[in-house]
Image 1 (cartoon, rainbow, N blue to C red):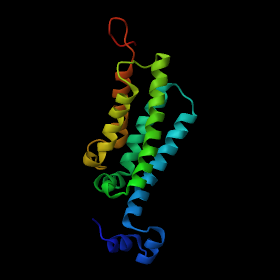
Image 2: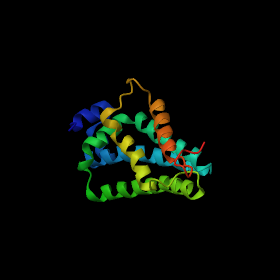
Image 3: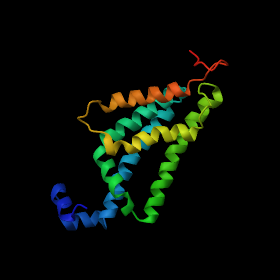
Image 4: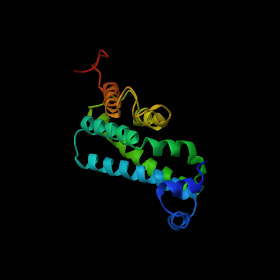
Length: 176
């Protein structure tokens, strides 16, 4: 809903310069989200490259996705509000990238379940939906000047997810 004139004035460029790099405002919207996604996926790859145990890895992934979403909350709000404007081809590209990210996280969860470090009470899909449900909703509730900083929210979510994944004994009690 922002006029192109407002965008170019804020960016300090001419309309011609903007249209040189972006054919339309939709291209700009796609680039906004793609940039955030590229950063999050690069962080995920660095976390996975450490080849740490599943608990350490999943904690790092959760903390990263929450804090980077908070860092780019303005961009996330724009995308949440206007993503319907993206054409089908670019939407499919975003979806393919998102699936790749989700599949990587689900692989960490699955590895933890197969090694016995995580409970199998919930599937990797449900666990990842829990994580991403919170982060995808952040544009509607997170405020950088709010009562909890992103790092605190990230640590709490990681603690909640990891506590829920803790294997139980035969009596149904969490293992120490």
